[in-house]
Every structure is written in C-alpha cells, then in structure tokens.
Image 1: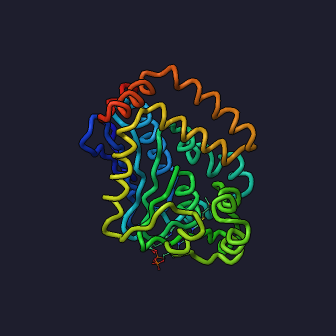
Image 2: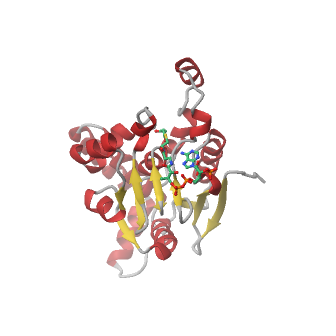
Image 3: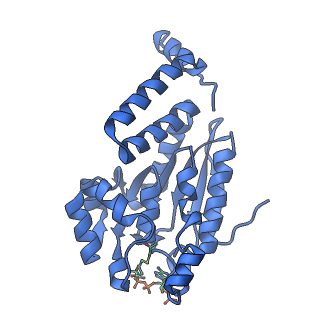
Length: 263
Ligand code: CAA
C-alpha cells in the first residue's frame, strides 16, 4: 500500500520468517542519498522491523553503485545557517540505527561518502568484487557528515582511515576485506544470492537471540569493554528464561533440528 519513488522494496525467502529486501533506486544519480530517498529508506526499515514475518533486512544498491554519497546538487546551495537549522544529514540518516533486527549491507560498485557511511551503519557488509569504498568529501571542500570520521577508524584502523579520509582514494573490495571493513567478498553475480542466504540463515534463529547479539556487538563497538561484558552476562542469564533456550538445547541433545518459537 505504500509506494516509494527512490527505493524498491520486496519480501523474499522461503521459510516461515522472511527477508525484507531494500534496493536503493536512483540509477541516474548513482543512488545519491537525497532527503526523499533517506525518508523512504527510514520508513521501509521501520516497517520491516515492526513486521513479525521478517527476520532480517538486506540493503543493497545496483551493480554500478551502492550509493555515490549524499546528493551533491541539493547540498551545494546550503549555508551554515540553513544546514544547521534544517539539520542536514540528520534524523532520516540515523533511522537505520533504531532497527533491532539485523541489517546486512550488500555492496556492489561505488560506496562513497554518505554511501560508505550508510554501508558502515549496516550490521555487516558483504561486498561484490566490484565494490569500491571511499570518503571523498575532502575533494568537495567538506568533511564526512554521517559518521565517516568515527566509524571508519573503528572499522579499518586509524592509519588506513586517515589515508582514506585525507587523500580521498578509493579502496577496492580485496583491500576492504583485508582491512576488516567488509565481512566477505564474493563474485559480483553471486552478491545477492550470498546476502540472501546469510539472511535466510539468520531468519531461522530465535529472533531475541539475533536482536540481542546486534545490541551487544554494538555495545562492544561503541562502549567500554567491561560494561559490554557485564551486560552480556546478564542477558546470557536472562535467556535461560526463554522457551527457545530449552528448545535449542533439547533439540541438540536429542540430535534433531530445533523449532524456535520466538520470532
Ligand atoms: N550526488 C548527486 N549526483 C551524483 C552523485 C552525488 N553524490 N555522484 C554521482 N552523481 C551523478 C553524476 O552527477 C552524474 O550525473 P549526470 O549523468 O547527470 O551528469 C551521474 O551520477 C553519473 O556520474 P558520473 O558521470 O560522474 O560517473 P563516473 O563513472 O564518471 O564517476 C563517481 C562515478 C566516481 C562515483 C563520481 O560520480 C563521483 O565522484 N561522485 C561523487 C562522489 C562524492 O563526492 N560523494 C560524496 C558526496 S558528499 C557526502 O556524501 C557527505 C556526507 O558525508 C553525508
């Protein structure tokens, strides 16, 4: 019932829980992330997050570009005051961080500027061998505005992040995998099957486990180690109150496949 103009949205998969697939779709602008696109993306993400039939979300672009950054023509006329007052690159860019279900980024082609930043806001990135990552904002006389200076050094080391941010050079898929920016690299024609298979695997697990892992890994990544370990221990204990723990362990001991209840 909702129609989108800048993204394509689909539900895919064969199990009882399915995958929400979102494709960025402004091909003429290499999926430049305009405000209308980011509004639609936020709405689609929240709708999938609220849908009990969906276990996991895959976010992708086209073969040529995941996204070539924020939309330069609409950014160009801004002044400090208009950027500040309108909250340029603001609320609609962070909606993805509210999503509790896993979001897999499937990246082919360019992931530049805001495109690289959006990919880094996914829970993990599967890259096609054609993927190219970069933060070229410095060439426009600006700096990243959607977390690039903060997430890139956490993902790839300080030295590599400084190199990418200060020289604006692009990193190919092999370098991105070596640096830890992406979890796997696959031939371009296998990108979607690989990402959807990973999603399908996740869909088969207990929903609360997947949501808690996401929350806790984000805590490991963002906060102090001791806090993360302490919170992890509490939730680990709490899951012994769950039917799915009983089912998962009973099934293992009985050498049968588990049938998880909480989705
Ligand atoms: N915004 C709007 N349109 C864009 C765009 C962007 N970020 N990137 C590319 N396009 C458009 C081009 O203007 C071009 O449109 P026309 O055909 O109408 O001229 C079309 O997409 C195809 O692009 P090119 O002809 O340039 O294609 P190419 O293959 O020669 O180069 C590219 C591809 C290297 C990605 C090049 O387009 C490029 O450098 N794009 C800009 C990348 C960039 O600077 N991104 C950062 C933006 S700032 C930002 O994102 C801020 C932030 O942190 C949030």
